[in-house]
Length: 488
Image (cartoon, helix red, strand yellow):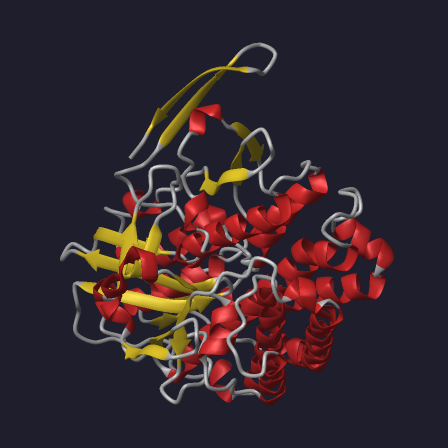
């Protein structure tokens, strides 16, 4: 539906408009639009303009350093990389499964990460657009504006993120870049003091999460003409699910569901992802474009993240979140919801699920005592897959007999969503910008579509090889006087 806006046919005679940088997202990216004299859009692209390269410089490092190193990919979702790496390296040290204590501590850490990340994105980054409108003044469309106009909403958002960060600190050792998950298990227990402090707040966090779900649900129901069509690009959905079909954010097997709701693949072992997914490269972005191999790049692209997970599972294994999942499904009479803004509703349902899991898991005695480490016969490689806040995250390592990493492959959540984000950008450009006088508010519509996916752009670019390069020469006044481009 949106493929025709990927590459214009007469690019040199078109006017270029850039949104650079994209605001209120993690990392650095830009959008370029090519328009003719009538303002019609001929090309719309989301560019990821930074390169991280972790796949290359992890090589040669001792495997036990990796769970701590990969956290430096991101300050927003370090726990996800920490746990995915530890899960992959559990196979290398023969610790599959890990002990009950290690499994539960990691899960508690992970759900703290889900809760804090979802709260940060919705309340701080996305809610200004939803509460004030996409065309509201930029001076109002920010967290300070939310605090001024909706102090209770802002207070609960800040409190939810703080609680999630406290869960991480109690399990990982510190709020950002902790060290608790190690190959084979965990290096600490939860202290009774931390457990009691978290339990004292857990009920309030569940209630505030319920309020957040109701807030975004009311926004949808108040303006379905906007929420049901904005950035709507039908696609397949991919996520982990539990063996019984339940939502599973820490461990599980891959499920792929078609845009019409049909399950296309089920029970796919996560370690076979290389037989399932191909990563394509395009000359105008540092970020790859994954697709399901046997479906091909045109039909095989998919979405991941909250919108995929809430609709891909058969049920959510906590009662309050499950009720909200059913309400989400009833809103479309059981049809798959593809509009980009529905990500926010699904995200808040997951935040409620995380709050319930944390509340129910905290009293478990295995968290404060029990065997922390497991081990067994060594293996040369391991794959760790986890559902990060933004979607399915894959870490894959080969380790030599000298304990040094020989090879690494990362497919990050935002990378999975690359094609979907580009298509959402083109759909919004066609509907909202085509033939109109561009304003800051109209251009913000493009950013709203991108923000709905909660992209972590700095996490998503790692592979060396066929990379594009653009060099611009600016004069003293900042005007571009020359450009050189190297395509892949």
